Image (cartoon, rainbow, N blue to C red; front, side, top):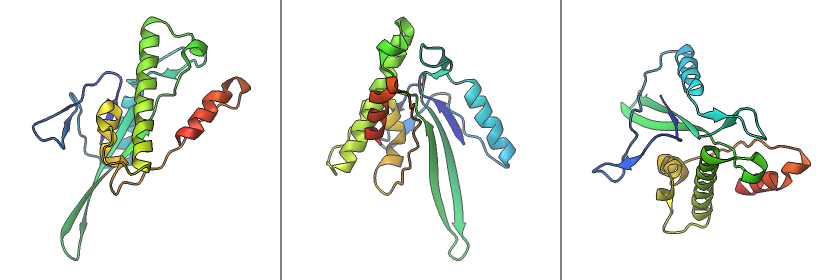
Length: 176
């Protein structure tokens, strides 16, 4: 199991184009639900958050929890491998409403850019285009194996019912 915060990490291709390297990522064996909860707690405690005009605990990054699963067909001794990405995306921000300045403004721009890149990838996949722009963000590079091919994707969103958030709510629903 791997828990990543996508604000601070760098991702790059190795000599093998199909592989990515995530510096300082660690893989942990899980033997119990307690192990899972402990690692998730560590990840949450280290996640970048800050206070904005709209949210007292605003996520300043996307977090990705990757669970690697291995199983065996006992009849054929065939080993199957898969992974499950649990992704908590930072919310999109209208910079003028969040009153972001300096570092918070840069973070908000980074968040919005990566969400836009994810939207572009999802749209491109839906159009069945030949070229999918996975390399436009760290997030889409990391999630590439979960977005195309035979991958199954399920998305949950959190919406704000306030009238002041109407345009963000519509934008979020269109994203899905």
